[in-house]
Amino acid sequence: MEMDLKDHEVTAEILKALGHPVRLCITKGLIANGRCNVSYMEECLEVSQSGVSQHLSKLKNAGIVKGYRTGNEIYYEVISKPAQNIIKALYGEDLS
Amino acid sequence: MEMDLKDHEVTAEILKALGHPVRLCITKGLIANGRCNVSYMEECLEVSQSGVSQHLSKLKNAGIVKGYRTGNEIYYEVISKPAQNIIKALYGEDLS
DNA sequence: TTATTATATTAGACTTTTCTAATATGTCAA
DNA sequence: TTGACATATTAGAAAAGTCTAATATAATAA
Image (cartoon, rainbow over all chains, first blue to last red; front, side, top):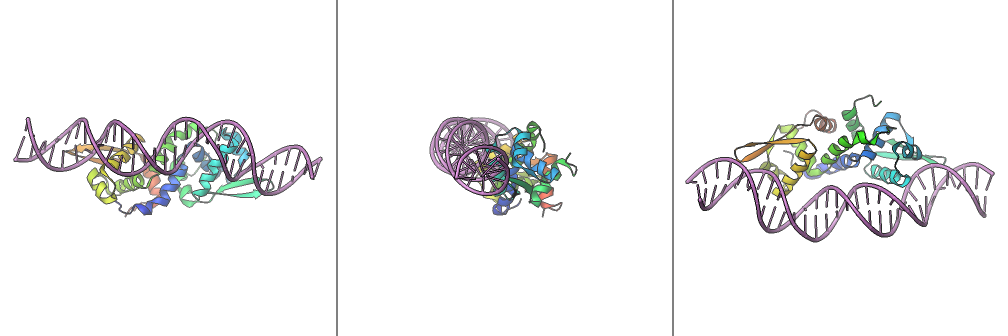
């Protein structure tokens, strides 16, 4: 049995961030498609603009995604290797 | 972007269950060592008996672990393939 | 400048999670 | 049976998460 709880805090943070249907969906979608802007996620997921934005904020805080602005929209992409590994472990390499 | 949020609920449930340092630690330890009883987890993790038991209960509800009694102690083991895949994706095959 | 579009942030109500302390259950040994 | 040990369950307080609605910011277009 592993002893040092602190070692697991960062990883648990990633898992917790992915542990919500909307955030899992966003993260999987981003890995499958490379990148995406917020309004598109909004439409696809049928979640409010504010909701999507708040979920993205959690993913950002967990170091999972990063956004960059193009014109007046912001595109997000997944930057966390552990998060990518988790998604692949769950859904396989081909994220249809 | 994936569209059906409902499809992700079960998986998100697993991720959420693993998304706590104590539960991640327990799950990783169980996969590394095969199985373990509750008092041993208690000692190693320095978490209260009640605490360990409540965390185990969440892991059980998420379908991640299962316990079986031997005498008056209960041994737990990981029974969820997705959970095993996640742990391996995070820590590799050799969980020292 | 003003208006419009895209996104973020805040506020507040509500729900869920987490922790500690106490109590309950189940098994074994004397 | 009683007592000891291992584990589970309950209760309640505090903290964190989630949702909706409203407001704020940033970029662009007219």
